[in-house]
Length: 78
Image 1 (tube, rainbow, N blue to C red):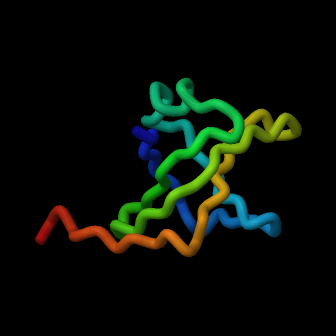
Image 2 (cartoon, rainbow, N blue to C red):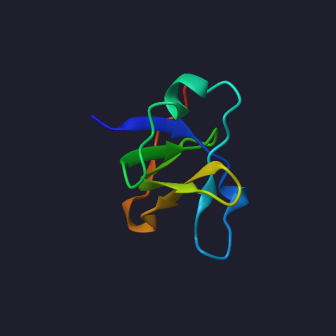
């Protein structure tokens, strides 16, 4: 089973990576391994399969989403 982790799709960079923020997700982030398959989602209930990538230069994690795997999830507030 893949780790499901919150991201902000507005942080997509020129290499098509999305930043993985640590705040409130420290336990999940501590389980990441370079090239590990993960699931990323945002607060708008949009989810993608992705690969975790560690960037030495910034000492942080990125996700490389597979944009073809888009899933629109039902809102929890409905």
